[in-house]
Image 1 (cartoon, rainbow, N blue to C red):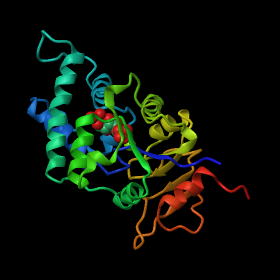
Image 2 (cartoon, rainbow, N blue to C red):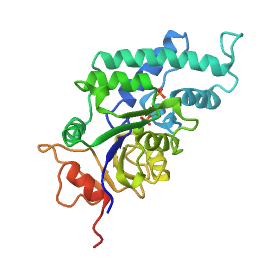
Image 3 (cartoon, rainbow, N blue to C red):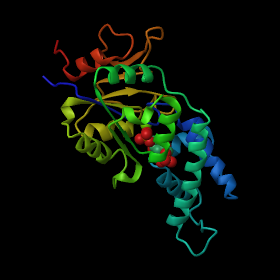
Image 4 (cartoon, helix red, strand yellow):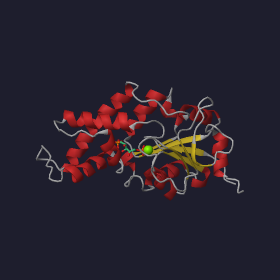
Length: 258
Ligand code: XBP
Ligand code: MG
């Protein structure tokens, strides 16, 4: 019998729908400010999301679309120039969040509040830059940062999702075994990362990830639901639940074999 001790949340696409109207918009803002005529459309960004990590995504875009690109500053490497461009994007993104630009997804605040009241440990495992997590939580949760015992984010690990590094790091910081935790993700890359860390994983899809392969996920939902906003079960079984709560979380960790 596994005893649920912690919930580990992905950020982008899981806690909040940040990609289309947040990250993508601020990548474009940084490109314009740098005098570049690059503009990532909603559709193109969906393709670029196959590469996790903003710096890695810019590099991948250059290799695909501007293979002969030379940074406008000859004294620095392309890698350093990308890092500077990404830092500018992060400044635009955190400012957008501070202005209340992005809300938490349905059921997220309710589940976090229930978990905090029940003494359930909470952690984050994300590819995004730590400053982005801080800005999102401070904007969306009353004393947001304090709710999470561990915030594993961005370059803290050498390999980004789908590698399991960030989940291994979060588990190590929690000093917990994977079988006593539940992971929440939105993408195939995130699921692969959590699965390789032997974590039972719940998926909440979004427009960018709906058609991805979520084989092996414990449950695939359209969102975590609210009492007055039932979720849609896309794969797996939620028994009689119509929204995600700790009781359902505990059942997923110890599925009854029929
Ligand atoms: C999603 C990512 C991140 C964001 C952009 O992270 O892959 O790279 O798209 O953020 P997750 P940065 O779903 O793991 O939360 O530009 O800071 O990387
Ligand atoms: Mg995600």
